[in-house]
Figure 1: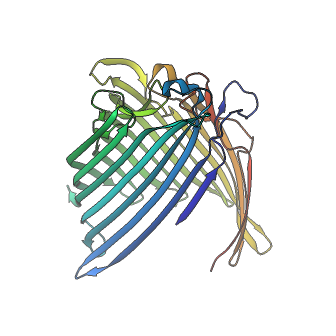
Figure 2: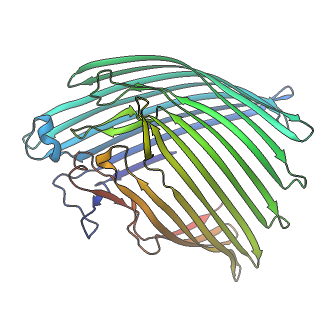
Length: 439
């Protein structure tokens, strides 16, 4: 797969502007080039099934920002331009072995190699420039994993699995304050346990599941603290759910309730000079409930609905101090969706038409008190229709039917966000026409 995205300017606007325009002195283009190759090979090895999955990803991401509001922090005057160039690559090889047919166990091994290289430069209108930071990060990971399921008490299926990984990370950064390097060797164990109970008629299941994972730390970009390091964070989740199909498979629904504890949250934060760094923000507790419904009442009509409610709070600061009701940023408390579709026929053409509504609830931007800005709280409507005849399909789609200007993300430029409130509107009303031929 190949994908190149070139954008002439960034998409945020100023919150006090009535029109969706922004009058910057410096344009803020981006260039995002993505390449991916993958290969899967599978077959029998005696009575076992062997799967080999290989993938390679290469991405280059370059962007520029108007840094005029922070020019004095870098010893510049007038207009200033910040440029950041990043290159990422990931190679992953995985082998999986399981019984042929219905699998009750699985074992595997994987090898991963990831690199990140970056350089950021700020320049003034007089031609003066300075390198803000260079970063070179290399990570190698070896992992073994497995999972097995067996029957308990004649009806309950118990599943136990784990992933054991050994990672070696080497970070090297050059900043205006000097050079810094970090080597991290980590052995991590990520277990998961679940119990499932098939319902009597075979049309559903009730399950209880627990999983835990850890994410390695590293060298914080643009750091101003003494160590320049952020620690590993860990997350544990337990959820109880049900999936059920009734009414001759015309009605299906699922729901689950979950609790997540997130320790030493890795979070980006804004430095006084406008650069972005990473730190551990403390501990969070997340309670949530989600449900979905799919109903086919007849006459070619299909109704689907779903929603989620979350109560996400930061309960302790990095030093362990208890906090009062601090909402975890970016996570909306409420989301919902509803769609209605109907099959249609026009002469020899057959297909469906549908309308859909998606609601994104209120959320906040950041842990920082001076960036605690609201966003979300909007509903996006869309409609689409498709008709097929033989190998041909024609379609039309209308996104953002009402052309709303919902705030999808209350952020745009880190160098000026503290001086002017910003927001990123959702994509405006868009019409998409398509013609497809199958071979």
